[in-house]
Amino acid sequence: MSRLIVVSNRVSPPNAAGEETVGGLAMALAAALREYSGLWFGWSGKTTPVFTGALDTETVDGVTTAVVDLEEADLDEYYNGYANKTLWPLFHYRTDLAAYDRVYGEGYSRVNKRFAATLAPLIKPDDVIWVHDYHLIPLGRELRALGVKNRIGFFLHVPWPARQVLTTLPGHKRLVEAMFDYDLVGFQTAEYLQAFEDYVLFEAGGSQPGTDRLRAFGRTIKVGAFPIGIDAPEFARMLRGVTARRMRDLMSASTVFRNLIVGVDRLDYSKGLEERFMGFERFLADNPDMRREVLMLQIAPVSRESVEAYQEIRGRLDALSGRINGEYADIDWAPFRYVNRNYRRDELAGIYRAARAGLVTPLRDGMNLVAKEFVAAQDPADPGVLILSRFAGAAGQMREALLVNPNSPEEIADALKRALSMDKTERIRRWSALFAGVQTEDVTAWRDAFVGALAGAKERRAALAS
Ligand code: ADQ
Figure (cartoon, protein in one colour):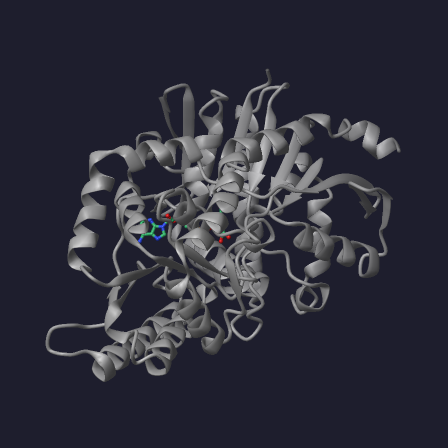
């Protein structure tokens, strides 16, 4: 079996797998690599005055991580700049927040060149390379420029926007052209894949030589939809552990006689938190008889704090949560708990299990793993109800959730009422179908589907000749 090289912006240290807190992408990749004895390459998360390309490597359980420091300017222009101020908002349909600055674009291309130059000497002829996410779209192109002939695949974790949105990005064609240096390009859902095809056919003047092939810029690539899942066996193991059980008991004790509604997200404007808070407020206003029977817990650790849009949304959420409790709290009860810290993954598992309803209402989301974790954590004999945004990638697979338009506080309020009034038979029926999907379409299935498709992608040279 060929060695798998995974490249992503951030790399989680090998000993962070398991219960420690790491992001959705990092957890998925750690799980994906475990069976491959592969190499995981990316940024260390640290900065250095001058870029040296010095690698810090570590091998644990057969997985080698190799990380490199970046310069301060790289952090500003590539990570906080082009990745998080330009591409992230744009790919999440927030053209109002997207900043276009040539300096950011230059930083993005410089860092991708630096990553390529640092990685290239580590690549052996049979290695298969798998590049992840919007930070690294041009990496394949830079590796090709250095003569790397290996199979290289790219997977986008976030949504691919509609052509009309993407074309607001200066230099959009260059970005898409770079994707044609991969052998396989994967998206989370058929909808994002379709949006990509639409761009290639109608903006780039390309063609579709086969159902899973696209041709443009003089090259043919393989494309596909590969919905990511959670590490289901690992999650089940955590749920049986003492920390998860203790957390569930703690939550149950602190919500006695009340139904717990839970939301867990990074504090990000794409997650629909303002609309969600207003949806809960609306529910309290519309349902005086149910008011004192509920408690909502929103966990939202702050992220990307150096980007202004994140500071602004934080202020607005603080104000909204204060307003809800100010309006509805009583001397012995407050309806809303809003917490800005991280929890261990096994603690989260226990929190999900104690909840009667899970509110997962992003305005846009590539997939959303919290929806899947919530389902995986439920008690089969008395499961909670998942309320899910129709604009999360997960909605395509999780049709038995209560699907809502996350822009509408009224729809969220109605769905909450429905979830909290739902009889056990219906809850079990919906949950069983959701759980079956979460179990089978898990992270291992995702990895195998992508790596299998990449192995089956035609040799690059053959593709060029076709
Ligand atoms: P994210 O935007 O990070 O990921 P998501 O898929 O929901 O979104 O993953 C978040 C992960 O972080 C979950 O595993 C969750 O348990 C964890 N998490 C969230 N809040 C936490 C907290 N307070 N403490 C501890 N852990 C917390 C991106 C895309 C998604 C896509 C993933 C994977 O934006 O659409 O699903 O990558 O492809």
